[in-house]
Image: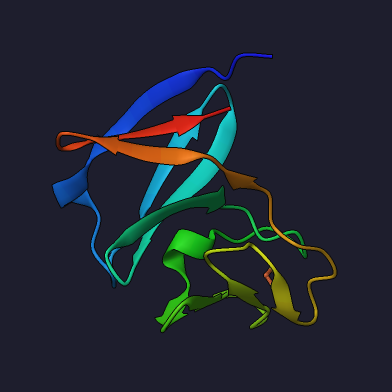
Length: 103
Ligand code: FES
């Protein structure tokens, strides 16, 4: 099945300490930059409702701003309760200065 790529941002909109919240086809997705690589993960914390792009970034982890669940940004893995599942991740690629993700 072919993936559907969407241009969501330009690279200069995203910084290591400044992720970007985007909405694609009704999905809220966070674009993060870690060690010069870009990652697209589900932005809504699976525990309740908080945006992880408003959370606290520590290295390659992000902590939910509401109840402090922790997720690994590159893999989406849930590292700390109270969240109980991993985040969905999306394919991402850079073309020139554009950031594209696939749904
Ligand atoms: S909403 Fe994220 S840990 Fe509760």
